[in-house]
Length: 401
Image 1 (cartoon, rainbow, N blue to C red):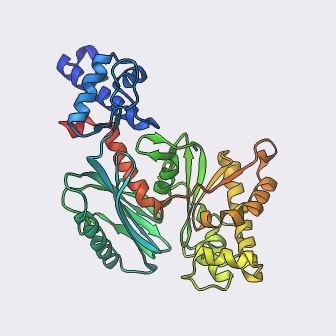
Image 2 (cartoon, one colour):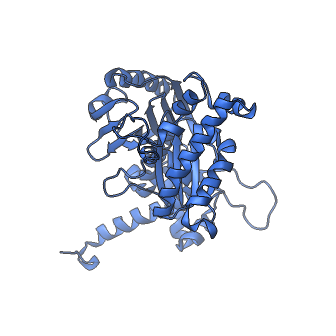
Image 3 (cartoon, one colour):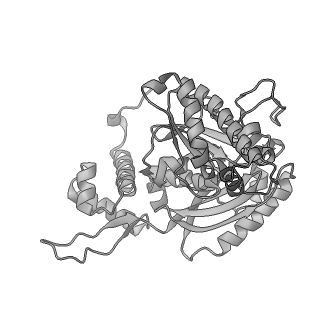
């Protein structure tokens, strides 16, 4: 039976109202592209100035907001004190991929407080040994954090099919891992009491495009995200939110079949996109060693090297086939490239946009766009920290007591 507000004790109603309003004030400050004053907060939230000021003071006392320097320019009236997201709270983002390990600490302002990224070939590695290596990376990072910084939690980005609720990596073809419970392994990585959530690497990396900072929306709200690593991950973003489907596994663009009679993929299928446009696939087709960089491939293409040019053309064709199918189904014509695909975007874009224009039904009226805004290496780690900080914005009262 639904409980009516009138049936709720007044003290509980006041507590609920306080919690709701604290979150509203904090999110308003974090969502702003520039500092706000107390008066600005009151106007944006519809609160009285007295109510807004009281809630701001509570958030300041708890370290969830900070005050900036007053405007030094002479103005009429009392100069306003700008409000900023607090620098006391931060979250830890971790990432394990087939080609790297990463640990990154992000604060409420979206600043990277500390980070460590280690390139490594982890294909076929033992999970316990890999997590022990991640633990060493993480402990060194945490040991150097500024005094007084409080970690509110964090997350781990993994490349594959993840059961977030159970905390199990169901399958990561490029790592060679299956049915891996991560809870015990994570206890060896982070300090006791620090909760880490599990997530798909591409889903979390897409958050770095959807959000400029915790609580602040990025310029692109609806897009398909492709995470280019050794393989290719994908995510669907609508109105700034990652769409994972009822199973939580939506977005596996890298395993869309582009050639049914193509080579076998580690996922068990054949002719998958990442066999033609994954980083290792492109380097191998160009005749380069697997530890070469996308920049090495780009230089060969610009020098008109036949093998490199053919590799890139095949990669663009495969991307066009896979993405056209996805765009036709979900109706999102904006594609954001990440990882090695972003590094090759200028070379891929002309052919890729041509393939999409010829295959996407709506292209005549709304031409598909290929974007490569750039971003941090190991963007999944940043996305994992952003997701954890989102929990603070949703319920700041939990941090204030």
